[in-house]
Length: 462
Ligand SMILES: [Zn+2]
Image 1 (cartoon, rainbow, N blue to C red):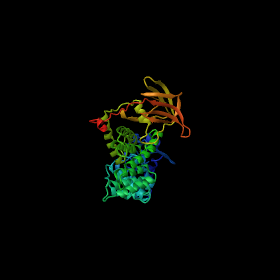
Image 2 (cartoon, rainbow, N blue to C red):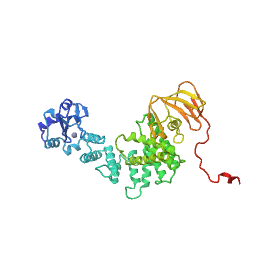
Image 3 (cartoon, rainbow, N blue to C red):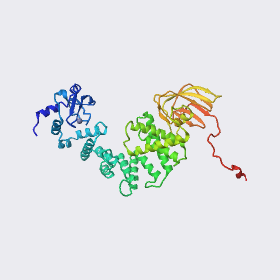
Image 4 (cartoon, rainbow, N blue to C red):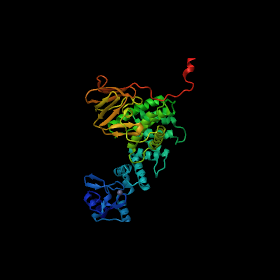
């Protein structure tokens, strides 16, 4: 095709067009053939030609503003579009395809059937060119489905089976979930277990979660609840630490793991029944799930399912004990909820915290102190159904305190203890532990209600 001078001239206006766009009323995209207000252009990309407007509809820098002197009706746009972007050209331009695909994934392209079909077509082309991310993306779309694409396990597996993808942990997990779901004909428990096991061996936390799930529900292996609980607890420690250290930015798989541990406490699987430990884990799961999804819908259907069940379980427990949502109370229970995890993980970190003693009243048994740190504390108060990061300083009021040993304000990194004995605030490692403060609780009668036995214990004397 001979070069069309007019069209080539139009094309020049898609580059280095910042001033032109901001002084335009409307603009048109010669890639996706949309016309819209120039005020909708919010994104820009810089290349050797200058700063180019990015189309808010399709994500390609192919925007022409009307202040260039060019305006188009639908037919004209189509003609220009086909001149520059005939199907064969698109296939030869992976960069263009990848730009579109990434913009589509980022939700920056109008979500409709036509655009999703383009996404599928481009992913397919890119996958054929050896782009494994595109193969995964397409497999994932068929795996989870959308408004315009029906879930199709066979199609999904076809893309997941790309030889360069089969050793990717994320793909192994997705494939494993398909095998386990029974969406394919025939029983695939063995394949599911093997996929999760491989992903886990490759260091994938998500793979490990589903691997331990197999021991919980007996997928291909004998049920071993204790083994699953120990496994989840170890994973939890790592995920929790990341969450804490990044003040919630790295959610990793904390919601999914906390949910599972909570369920095990609630259902007495692999660990004695304990509603409060369950609730605490559920609150942490709910909070981190909320961080994970933001204001969008869940990307993975299994997360949406877990979340629904999680909310019902929180509801059940809080109704049973008449707990209602409110602000946290910084008392013994909340300190325990937030800083002790003897049952679920071997450690809980408080990095470089300042302990500031305020007032100890031995007669009342009350002790007031302040904790202060550079980053916010993750506070859980199960009685207030509260879990969130809270800025320091925090003033704590403990009760039933028998004794408190402390010096001036000082730094600590660990608070070890429980609600029966008390707390030791320390810093340093095993070879050099520095005690910062010690709080001892009054020895109390067991507060739990003992089950009332009829005919009491007199029989045992006979
Ligand atoms: Zn466009």
